[in-house]
Length: 97
Image (cartoon, rainbow, N blue to C red):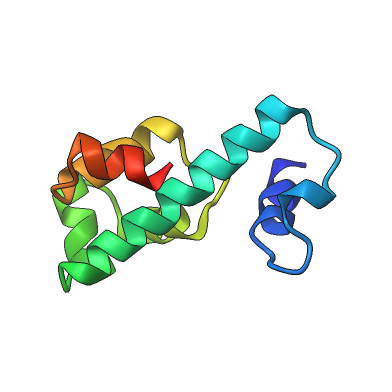
């Protein structure tokens, strides 16, 4: 179920507001998607491949790809640690959400 929710939430035409979710669930999903986008943007800004960024985080390239795609199986903790591994500051983290 959550995979379809994340897919719908990340689809521009539908968006998260078109889903029947509680405010807390919607905000949680929006937060994870925002952090996923920020993580990808930061990696690209630093001119890192997914493989190189994955090694900094001590994870696999496929797991990193799922992080950047907003996969619901990726924990909020992993997204935050991924941002910090790329050198993000608390201020950048707060700005992302």
